[in-house]
Amino acid sequence: MSATIRVLRPFALLLLLASSALAQGTPPVPWTQEMLSTTQLGTPRTVYVTPDGYDAGPQRYPVIVILDANDRAQFRLAVANVAFLADRGSIPTMIIVGVPNGGDRTHDLTPMPT
Image 1 (spheres, rainbow, N blue to C red):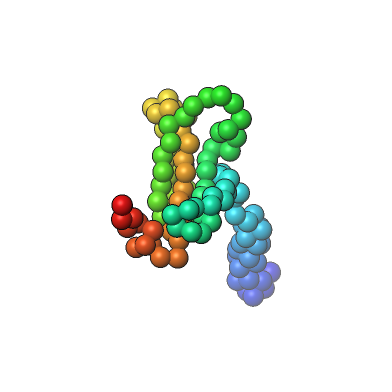
Image 2 (cartoon, rainbow, N blue to C red):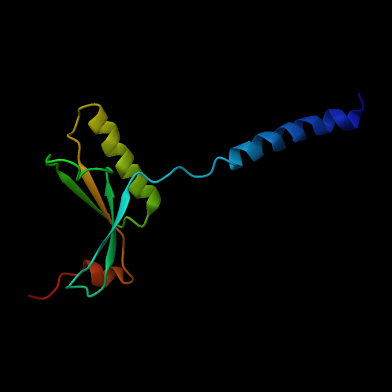
């Protein structure tokens, strides 16, 4: 076996493994996307709700509202932590509502005058 083949063999193996890893894609999101119309803000807003199927029966659940849900990594982490703790019986099953920022975060988080 020539020296060139011995040198190129590990690179070919690495390329093969990397191409199959890239083909897997991203996992599906574990929440549904809902559109709400708002009278106070005057624009429709998107919220993310998990778990899917929460509205299928008469059960009632505690609700966690997470602001800045457009930070997908942080929102995924919150969803995963709640699922982890609920699966182990440490907390009840909960509905998580993620509220992404609008175009103007300061406007969205400033109380309206009464």
